[in-house]
Image (cartoon, rainbow, N blue to C red; front, side):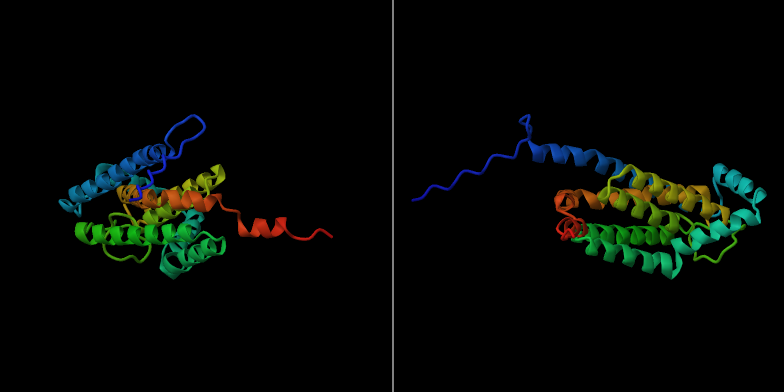
Length: 241
């Protein structure tokens, strides 16, 4: 009777550390932090559900400052963020374009990561919105659906930023992403579509969902990122005249 072959030892790095175990530890704390963020959003939603028409003091104070300093100069940029963060462009066209670009860059796992995180973020936002039923500010300047908490525009922006930051870990990607998400949050309060606490909840929820979805795909995403880029590869092998 043939004895079964012993299981191969776990891969080790140059210093003899267990690579698999190290990777799990590396993923653990981001997931813990993301889970805490999501729990905070749910907890804040429960508090708001008990007082859906009474904003927090910081909400009322921030909205007062926004209304006092409104001007035509800032209205245009705010409406731009409202358009690209929602409507058909923001909710369908841009996500589908990003998904197709990731496939074109031979990042199928990256495209899968983006799709799952985006859809799950939208589902969580709508579930919490309809459960909490928070009233929007009376100073609103745009048409919006019911339910103010959390901000869907801000959650979508945060999800996109974290996903792209993970897939393309460059400093400039994260800087541009953070600026985009913050401006999206500010624009929502400027238009009176959301209280400031709505946008904070959206940022935490969108980022938290993205990190939680990333964890089980981290190994596949890392292997995929290490593969040669198709366009760079084509350029490298192009004939020299």
